[in-house]
Image 1 (cartoon, rainbow, N blue to C red):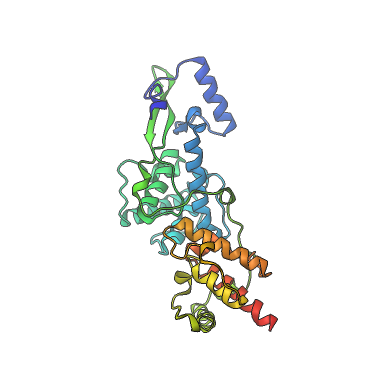
Image 2: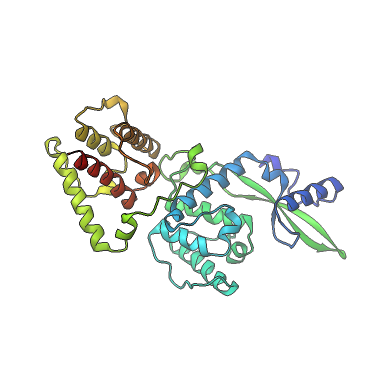
Length: 337
């Protein structure tokens, strides 16, 4: 936090700093309305930009299934609608006491429900975030809520460590207005939370494209049909693995690291993939992602389409993505026959 030592709780009284702040406000549509605003120096901080990029990619990796997308992390999550969709997808839990609607009352009810639900996960507010802060588009509240969620639930992406940001607030003072700056720690030693993860790569900086609607979207509206199709695909896979002493019980779980996917592709194509071409016992998410992407390259060489699913979803054990992938392999070879 050395870069902010000169800003801590100071009054921004000079014409230069005030002019710089106003220019930043105009460029970012932030009015001088009493809300905490990001100090221009913080906005230029590389670790801050990486944190926002990483959290945005993380949120979008979940809500894209609902055909939603976050573009402005702070603004888009503040009304509770996308925040509710994200936490629901993230935890696979239905958050109680929420309502439909876009009015201020509905927003407060939904944001309050999200915060209460987060507390049941073991998160403590401890002054880092609040319902009013999230509704008021307070950058500290929104970022701290998401970072604390990462610490409790886990995230496949690495968060930059020791990120602190300076924010500016206007307050009445001697008949006028003065601006005061305060510094807030957003992340700490992130290496202590969860297993090794991978950094957000260039292709993950933007939201992952939403798959083209297909039969699987309709299928997942009926749990019984999902179970039937899963059983069919599982029987197909186990039939191909008969001579390898492998039996698959849970598709999304056992295919998420890419190893079985590579073995299946080699078995179907009647070729052996050298063991040094991939991670036979992947130790972290980065190695699993490399395996799945390598499998996709093999599929592409065999002219099996991979356009409607992505490697990140498979590593995240997304059943729909896994079924799409295995069904593509299944149909490719049954059609050839």
